[in-house]
Length: 393
Ligand SMILES: Cc1cc2nc3c(=O)[nH]c(=O)nc-3n(C[C@H](O)[C@H](O)[C@H](O)COP(=O)(O)OP(=O)(O)OC[C@H]3O[C@@H](n4cnc5c(N)ncnc54)[C@H](O)[C@@H]3O)c2cc1C
Image 1: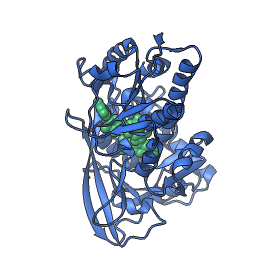
Image 2: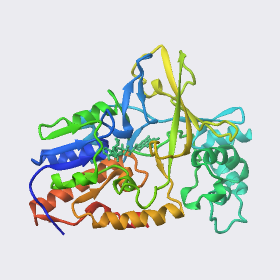
Image 3: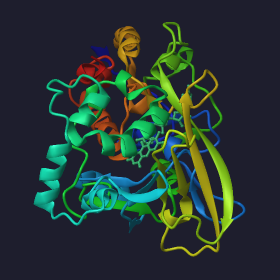
């Protein structure tokens, strides 16, 4: 257990994790220094207006806010007005456009039928490969759920491009549930609260950080040798980066975005996936459709390409295959020894986290810390990381 000392607290990363933790602690009277290597706040949720078209762009890929957690919905609405937004994704496969997630419309269109829900359920059940009793790989799981035709049209090529490997090399656990709806609901997310920040995520995060007790240092890379200047450090940067990659680099996928503009409406929706392996990009995002309350004649789109993350690339998706998990265990053990550092967020805990989960965990982490300082005057070392130990397994 660490003794809590009074003094400044370091928050590494001005993304949602860092901003929410910083704000909670600042509200409780702590002095906070926030560091980020980038020249903007909001981390990977960063949004900015495209200079040429005026469209609000999700710079590091499309971000749709969705949650069932009422407290988190109230929290984000405290800092920014959320406009109604439902994510409706389309996919182009073999020269045709379909609706995702696979729903009754997709099934009827794909097979040229007019099935009702019960009929479609029985039809898909017939297609499923029942010879696969204990699916081990992503491919086996998909074949068992939906059969070969739908798998090949909607999953195989996309997954191969996204993860850079054959779906036969990915674990079955990636596809946990039957990825099909037997009705015409094409709302991509199930969550009760969904929306888009009226002025973008960066404005929301700027407001979260706007507090007399918070100082933000942009374009400043924090190093663990600075810990001594602070009572405690909340670190939302990459876990392996914290230890200068001494145990090797954790595997990530990175993304390349190819920007292009169009006069008018390029694709009629925000996100168009491309399921065919022969198309090198995974999807095209047309950003103006994320702000349907705005009017723009011009349009800006990003083609998205996925590839292995190199040392100079931005880490996007943790891979978490067997070798990554072994390396992760080494870093997790070292992190647990850091007596006054809490590892948080998607990079600090090497997990994919949606924004609502990121905020939930950040609030819980800050409260745990405040509870320690106000109550017993001590907190568990690297409390957050230990609490989540099972997810490192
Ligand atoms: C392509 C993509 C699409 C997504 N879409 C959605 C979506 O639609 N809906 C949804 O809910 N979630 C989505 N997410 C998840 C969302 O991006 C995360 O929940 C969120 O970014 C996590 O915030 P964070 O603060 O933990 O990490 P980040 O946003 O990555 O912030 C970490 C910050 O730390 C900084 N940093 C790192 N190391 C250092 C250092 N040594 N010193 C100083 N600063 C440092 C980085 O520059 C970065 O700004 C998506 C993620 C990706 C990758």
